[in-house]
Amino acid sequence: MKSTMKTYERWLSATPLERLRLPPPEPIPYDLIGGDPMTVQRLEQRITTMLIPSLPEELRQDLVANREMWPSAIVYKILRTYQPGGWSEKSSLLMDLTQAAVAKDPMSAASGLRLWKRQRTRAIELGAGLPDLMLQVKALDQVVSKILPLHPQALFRVSAFRMETHVDERPTTESALQFHELLQAEMDTIVHSTPSCGGEKPAAKALQTGPSQLEKDGKPTPTSPDKIKPCKFWGTPEGCRHAKSCRFAHATLPDARERCWLCSSKEHRKNECPYGRETAGPQAGGSGGKSGKGDGSSSTSTSTTPTKSGNGKGKNGGGKSTSTSSSTSDATKKDQGLMILRLRWLEALLKKVRRQALVVRVSRIKVTRRRKSLT
Image 1 (spheres, rainbow, N blue to C red):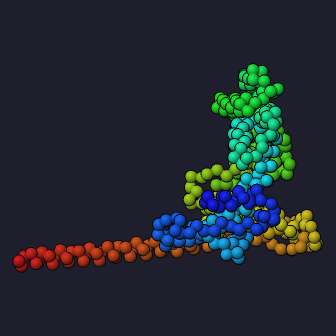
Image 2: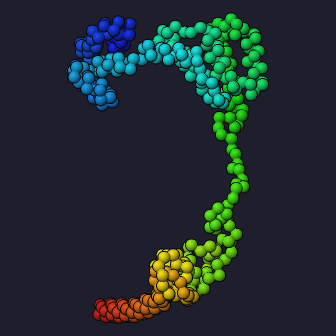
Image 3: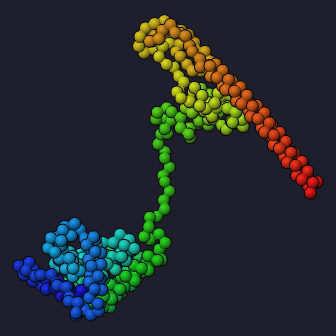
């Protein structure tokens, strides 16, 4: 690793033409490392197999094409590609040291000051020339420019420090670092002393005073007065023909298990409900039809109540109203009769099985008693 870093430092200080001619570091001979040569070779192979899959496809193909498949050459290729400590990193560090972002709250200000300190330390490690101290102090002041005016005590302490150290007129490295520490401490204090700092304040939603949904489209909503009124057909033997689309409330019934869950009728079940599949209402044919002419009675309906007949214009003139409730009730009665017959047959079968089991048990008891008497 030392030889790789030395080669990379030479590459950073070299000219563009010298960078092309600079070869990667050669692997160290096994004699200089010491130890078993086979062990060192296996270690290098293992490191190579760990590094190669973690590289991007372009770097991997370049290393394979150039046959640079030892650890030091792979690390050197990574350093050359991403150039840590190069011109781009130095320029971004120096720009961040002089043009810091303005913080919106104390928490972001504290994190911004910590980032500024890390960037300054990194610039010193890379050997970059630090910007003027006046620019550094201005950048620190810019980070907390929106936070200090909102906290008078912290603003007073910072102003007193500035007056005593003359950091705005004659700054030094020591006074600039002390100014940074003071701002960092003040931001941390504000963060921990203010409960709502760093997060969104809880707020209640505004009361909606606009027109309700019922006023907009004329349809009832769950909060409208029509929905509170109970349905007068719900709970009757015939049930409510509107089912789930009814405008009125459907309360829970005590005998709900014996009724249809959709319309509360006792004549059929949920899977046979004629009202849950389609919404009842006036259809084509009857008075006021849209197209066609003809003298006929009212439209077809799935309800049991007869509709009024009249002379109207419609497609299906002269037809009669149909009703499906009678057929469904006959079907449910047949199903109930079959279920009763099946239950009776099962009861008879259980009684027969119990009798046979009792006979077997009695015979076993008699056999055991005979054996005991003989012995």
